[in-house]
Length: 192
Image (cartoon, rainbow, N blue to C red; front, side, top):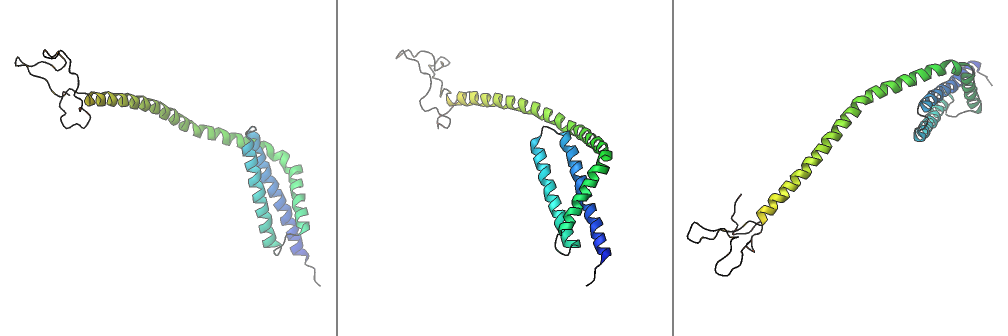
């Protein structure tokens, strides 16, 4: 029965590096979460993404280097790598992560300014269009009303004609509108 020391040592070092890489990613996400402290949804989303990526990395590590299985000592060495990162490298790298997340947030804010500007312009254009649309709708309603109730004809009395609203000398009544003067009436005549 042979015992290969070199592949086991290589697996040990790679599992420690896997744990340190996982801790580095977690520390980066921690810096992003600290940038947006009040956004609980973002924190939950980032934690879910981290757990999914860590599980995939551990499964790929076990399939590739562990001959299809994740051994218990591999998990222990990955945890050891994470602890070593948090004890040794994290205090040195956290200010760097904070600087880069602040710089990324400032760059994102600067890139978002044109979008805000265009949004304000679109809002003003929308208000103007709404106002114009309401005016046009009222205008069309008035024109439609005018065309629905136009007088059909002018009565002629032989002296140049009188308007239909004037009193009729024979029956002393006023004729205002013809009863069939709808929008599509066949006898429709009138002024524009």
